[in-house]
Amino acid sequence: MAERRYRVLALATHPVQYMSPVFRRMADHPELDLQVAYCSLRGAEAGFDPEFGTTVRWDTPLLEGYSWTQLPNRGSGAQSFLGICNPSVGRLIREGEFDAVLCFTGYRCATFWMARFAARLSRTAFLFGTDAVTLAPRDAGSWKVALKKLLWPWLFRLADQVIVPSSGSRELMLSLRIPSDHVTLTPYSVDNDWWIEHSSKVDRQAIRSSWGASHSGPVVLFCAKLQPWKRPGDLLRAFAKAEIPNGLLAYAGEGPLRARLQAEAGSLGIANRVRFLGFVNQSGLPAVYAAADLMVLPSEYEPFAVVVNEAMCCGCPVVASDRVGAARDLVAPVAEDFVYPCGDVEALARILRAVVSDRERLASLAVAARERMASWSPKENIAATVAAVQIAVSRMRRKTPQVRAIRPTPPTSSAESRKLSE
Image (tube, rainbow, N blue to C red; front, side, top):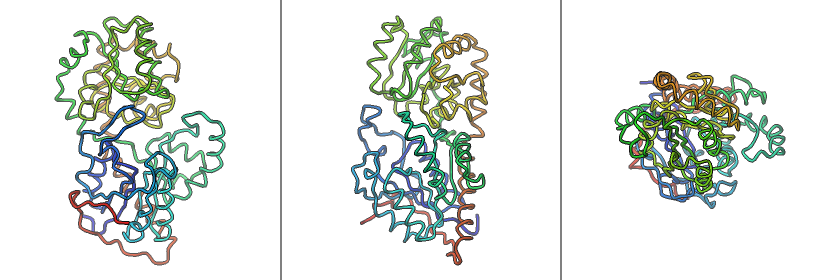
């Protein structure tokens, strides 16, 4: 056990299914005394998700195994500057005697700036970053690129240490002339052990049979929201072009493009070989990945995409467009030829045609996918996060004549968590 622990506040907009396992592990780390503060409980509580187009409540535990609190939100809850507005975060930071704040809210909300101001007043190290791998926004507005070029170098210098989840994000920070020793790569991870364990229990043939897949026919999977920037239609058209004997295409996800995709599948003459599974909750996803032979993510905007982590942990190889952040760190190390130019339907069709007929290669890629994930896990994420905290706290101490001692406090169970009073 370390003699001294860093008292750390992790500030997040809401509970996220892939972050909660990381928080649980961080809470057990001997060098951390972790407190998590949520701006809302969206995800842990049922609510309408406009991108899925349905009510979503994740069915795995999101609030267990670590100390957390909910901050009263003065905003509407919308993803806007004043939609996430939690004034009590300032008091929490000022009175909490934290050594560092890990801010995961993003800078486009009022709470981020309140937290940053409070951290500066209390001489608390403030860490934040971005998952972006390019300055280009999702809506491709050129004026936003110009604005980011101007503002982001200043913005990220506000961090005592910048934390980024991928090598692409790190390179973006360096291109903005953020010093390399001010940037730490904290790999975007999921609970690898959970995905491996649950996928190993799947009756693969039973799931495939329920979809109407033939015993030997390949199953290609799309697992994401059916939104324009995910480009699910590219995969539909590539699947039709590939003319895969006995092949089946499964869409796991909901969104506004579902009806259009169903109609297009009919016009392409492949409706009988396409399945729309709808929204699949967390507990059902290991079976979906394990039943598929290959997952494809054709997105034009995808800063990382943890569905790639999930699929590969379940032994499902992944093909991704070159706009997917995880393509560089996870897909290419397994199969370089599985990364293709975004929007090139013919290139995607060629990949599908070549790989799904090679059962031996698919089997070896399934093994390689799991092996890649062995070194991209919560272990690496937390080790890098602890290192980033150490750097940031040390940097803050050098700026400050007197620094309070790090005082560990007993860990609090999730059962003792409470809302902050105003």
